[in-house]
Image (cartoon, rainbow, N blue to C red; front, side, top):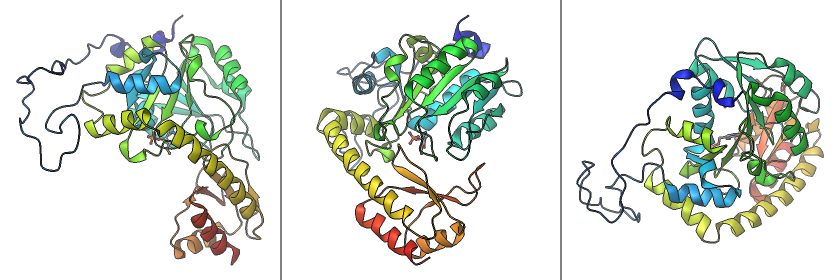
Length: 351
Ligand SMILES: Cc1ncc(COP(=O)(O)O)c(C=O)c1O
């Protein structure tokens, strides 16, 4: 059995859309563009021109970063789009389902609902929010096409471990695609699974430039998976999905000192995470701070609404995650600049 048998049949037979030919250096009289650049256009490619439909240079740059072959990478508009593409490719409306372990990133459930797919929830085990691998395995039936695993998990911050995920992939086999969302992997002691996908067609890894690489505004993520799966997902992406600005910002960042700069910033953020966690744990109003492998901390307070208001009064936004399953009274705090973390601690010390 191949994982492709789990893909919607009409997607398997879908013909790719063919945009205007991409031939740099030739005069473009074939795409109905304007021959003049707009005022203030500082891009290399020219904003009057369509970008390369699916930039090979961007795929190569991301493949280099993730240590995989370019055929295994599909650049997307943030990893949000990767989630959406996977759900659209695999889930038939009114028939198929995804499996998630809440509390987790709500986008998986949102994409499923938009597609008309169902959701199986195998909750993380409280109070440490560890993965119930037995439950996940048992929860997969013929209708479950995708298993989303967020590692490190948003908003609880934990990672189940590389071997546990690989074991799960082995056990699931081709019954469902295991989607490992590694949006926060750069902040984590566990290495990425991106290098594991070439030899396994039942695992897809989601990566993003939005977090450690500081390019949230550029909107660039990637699905890393077997070439067969990437080829299939490519057909679902609209032509010219990634803008000239995005392609140039990301390839530029990866060419110059971006990788080194990111490593330095990650190191600083990890030190800040540690001192923020210690500071938060020392506050009388905070009852729990969960260990985190990401750039945020999950905290619990009996007075979370009051803390939320105090943060707002101090000009600081933190995320109320209290409505998520199992997270009543919880707030998620992104690790910021040391001075902003200190402002939050100061504001909450009054509670
Ligand atoms: C776990 C997780 N995955 C994916 C995303 C989406 O990131 P982006 O679309 O910016 O790549 C986020 C954003 O917060 C996230 O927390």
